[in-house]
Length: 324
Image 1 (cartoon, rainbow, N blue to C red):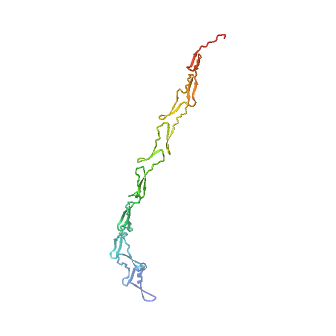
Image 2: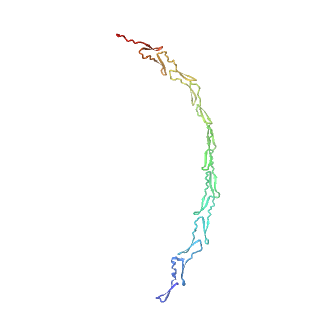
């Protein structure tokens, strides 16, 4: 079956032609992946190349040009928390990763998408009064903050939220007779207050309740005929009281107990004349005005007598006789 016989008229006689090459028709498509032969009894025999290497860790196939190809099988597990190996007989072996980095300062875990993650540990204790750090063997360490500022004028302490706080020392001794101060080395000091006001008219002293007091000196000499005052340089000064009231109608004098007296005499301007009214003008002195004795009556004759005053004498008016 691998040849055919026919009669060649030109050559004469039977001719046998080998046609076994026709059995390799598939080689153009499958290349080296196809084996073929011709059996004289059975004819064309073709078979595909067996590329199985009996290794479960490879994927086997035949390339028409290259022949058998054995490619490592892709890890079917996408979880990056496993280390994957492959045994040719049993297949893939999955071992969970040990992500421990032997540091007490990290949180170690495995993320299936990223693999081992070693996140730095936060040692923050949210206490502003400690210095926080991490030792790779011992883990978080906390040391108290030293808030001492070496200043005797501050009260040093640590606040949980804000840390070191420095408050000024209160040196106030509640005594207004001392000047209170603070020295950063020695602390509070108290110096007596000097209450001198350089005023001869005050008595200067310091009172523990109110501080400096400047009490005016009492210059009163208990004499109403002096003007008492105080000069800040010389002290008490006394001058005579001026009792002149500027009124010529008064007699001016001074009594040591009662002070000025300005007495107006009732008889000072009396001229003993009943025909005058007299008064005293504070500027001009005595003034005498004549009395008006007119009573507006046609039946009296009005005049003034220096002793008795106004006189009104009746009189009759006679009508003149005819012919006069």
